[in-house]
Length: 395
Image 1 (tube, rainbow, N blue to C red):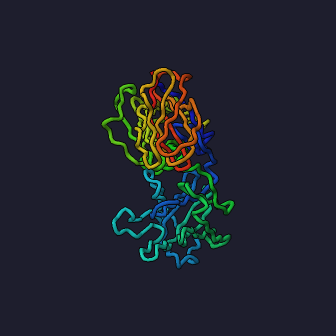
Image 2 (cartoon, rainbow, N blue to C red):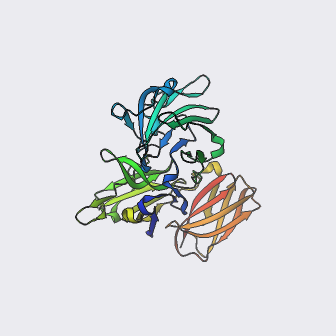
Image 3 (tube, rainbow, N blue to C red):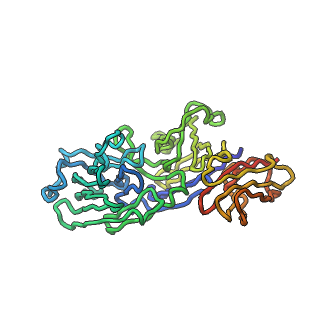
């Protein structure tokens, strides 16, 4: 199976965030510094992340939301600095102290969840120190009927802004973002179903809080790390994949002060199960540092999703399989009249695309694969209702 070399560039000083699909390559990019707060769009945890990677430091104060006006000056020595959880998307810095993992958890960190009316009401004031050493204060007022409401101002109360946005404006995104400088909501992510990995700068603990450049996994993408085994011998089975978002993280590299350059951890291999269910082998090969933000690796498809694993959106099968003679028969059972058929090689590169129509329940169509070389391929059959995948082997 082919190992495809890839370089994803986050730019000088890691100024860009890059969303990446293992099947389709880069699917989105945006400036890291353009946002300050990220608001979770799904679930009951109401996660709120702070962009600490751009130099913001957030503190949990002892001031209740009703005493907003009483907070007029910083008291950094008596406050507690809080950070985004580096392993979970849903626990941002403002969720510090939450108990939402507990069966009866009602504390969101920034406020309380009311089980009776399903409203989330804020009860804390946070202080934020910017990179230029100026201070501001922030409170999350509520989340009611899908509308986030919050207030921020300079710490002395000047330049105050009451802000809100509706989650429906960011359908199919993991987060909506907010900029303190433009006082606007930002729609900056690709669709949450379209990407697997985020290449970015973020705050981790090594062991204290420190900004690092690395790779984070999307929700529903799992991964595992194999150490101490030569890369060509590393296997993903029978290992255990985890949903921790920083399995790839940043420790695949370290800075060698004697050499004055970054070196890659030897005998470290990653396996990633992408959104459709394919498993990829990832081996990092280089990092260009803050000069260019280039993160280099090889990716190799080592297991494709099985036929019928996404049966909720239909099924696809190939007959015969392996295919000989250049003609494959597709057996399709799809909840749509028309579908797009895309074929990817085992390096994740699209090598063929066609469309089929006139589908009514169980349908048979012929696929001309004479231009494809012998090997293993992944079929993606896409309809307005979803995705079905299968394997294609050509002799």
